[in-house]
Length: 81
Image (cartoon, rainbow, N blue to C red; front, side, top):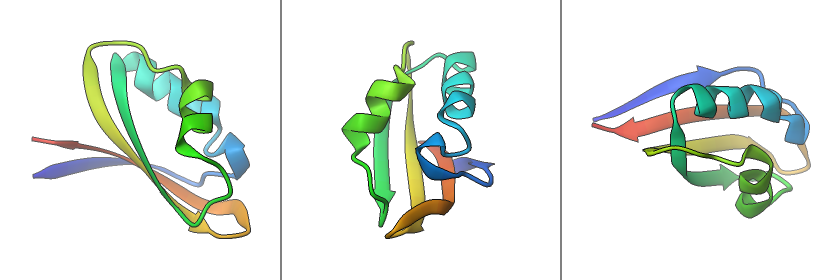
């Protein structure tokens, strides 16, 4: 089973603001972060450097958007149970 929390609406590599994602990860002690993205102009490793995940928990961050812009992107936090 996969559960997800939606962070909406993300914008540019400020996604829903990288700050918001970073706070969400920190509050849940997420250290292992698997980033999946589709049609967005940045790399998962770039985003991981900005987020600096720390902790013992693991989560998958899925970001979907348009090819030329991050303005209409959506970020989904999901974990397997």
